[in-house]
Amino acid sequence: MKRKIMVMIFIACAVIISQCAKETDEDAIMDIIAMDTMWFNSNTEVDSTSNSLLLQDTVAIWWRGAQTHSEPIIEIQILEDSAWVSWSRDNYGHFYSLAKIDTFPWVLWDKNLDETAELRATFLRTGDESAEHRGWELNSISLAYGESNTVNTVRIDSVCINSTNYQDLMITDPLETFFDLDSLITFPAGQAVTLTLYTNVEDGHAFLHTFILAWPYYVRLPFMNMGDGVYEGTWNAQLVALPRFAIFDLIPHSTIYTETGPYDFNGWLLPYMISN
Image (cartoon, rainbow, N blue to C red; front, side, top):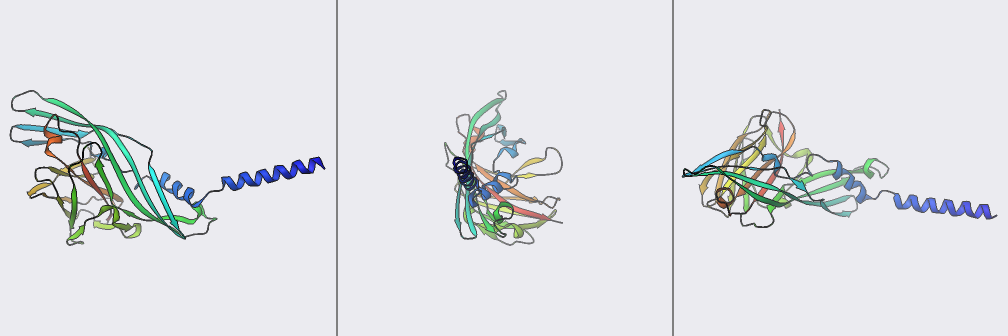
């Protein structure tokens, strides 16, 4: 009798432990996010390629160094077979500006980089709970949004996209603008794409960061300052048919061209697809 009671207690404990260890819907979605290497990895270190800017008698070559990251903060809201996700994390590193002022030797300014990147997404349950990840799949994503933490005075208010496929496509709220993964903004390989940024800074500097299949791989293209806080840049879409982010950001003059100006940044990351 005593043996039977012990066996029953053991089975009951095993059932309780099994139930406690059972994967929840939140666990399944968290697993998808953890395994994702494309969308849930927003940072600015990929623009490390340096280039030079000449302004009057000052030449500046700037770049971001390697970054470390905080653990992401992930909020999940589930309603029946739909889920809304907010993902964010902090990025830490250094911003370097190598400046030559008048006839003085080159000087290196090393500034602390502290920023937050955020992305939102939706998930749908497209399969049975017994399926992988309990049937959940990533359905859509927003633009990613980044800004410096210690000092943040610059702001991109909106972006207008122009290409053969898209005419005057305006985006004003990056974290509330969602694209289904099967219908991302798509540019044919090599197509010219023009971005116009509308900002709150008249004397700042705007850049597009993109990937190419040749050294140095990640390149930074400056936007033209059109005046009144408007910046315009054109690039040719890459040749390889893959989903990717186009990263464009805004930095004040003082961050690049002065020793005392702290790291100050606002950036948007646009998800898009290249088609052959």
